Image: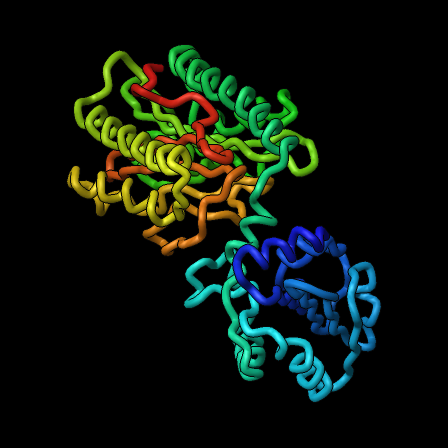
Length: 388
């Protein structure tokens, strides 16, 4: 745990303190930010308060009294619920604005990990509980130099694999055939050759399956690929280095010489929406203007709505990317949630608008990396449907 950095962040955001709380490992964020062992046996509630200035405060149960001993601060121990409430009140009442892993109306489920009853209890002591969302972004999603370097290593490998996957689909279709699940397995084998890992299997989806945003190729429902098919590949992976950052892209292709006019039309709308999303971020960072995730989604969504396909864009525009494929930084979202968290420098996220029709769907996904004063797309950007 970096106590100085946390206290500095609290001062910057004009917060009095950050209160961490857990019971039965409900809040993995707390363990990562505080540097606690994730395998501790936690059968009783613990609290850890970091003030803007001064010494942190601990509250632990007497039968698990040593759980926070690796952290600095003054310790109180309780046994009964009356003791817990009395000591917790003593700890929190000096602070007016207290951050917790709480999200108003659960707008950001990634952050809303503290149960409503505990928030009610803390508020009953006259304390204003606010969301720790921006703090979580800073300490969970901001990448260091090694993580940024790992993202580019994954990019190089995944871009090669994606290009080779399209080529292999074409070769196999014309020499004995292949199907979605087989190609997903081919990609996983390519990951192993490149020393990459992934939380889930890639998406290989043809025709109507590409109109299902999270279609999962399985052996029991795998479409054979053939001439005239529209194919979507969604591929994400990271290196095996500890803390490595993912790279996550989606491209589309057509098996044959010429996609249909409707396919071209939808692809061009989605491509241009993706570009607009990236430009919205890069322009804000170049101008030194703070921007939240919802603002980018709003711009992209309005573009697609104005083209007449708003009801076919059924998910957020993008998600944070870190050592987890769906990280804890700002998502590009004003649809599933209104993500008011600031997009911070040295974070990574996807821009991936999509239009999904019954016969086919198009998603075009790139990754954006922000730096102080600038932002960049980190990989190749698809300009035309790949001819397979």
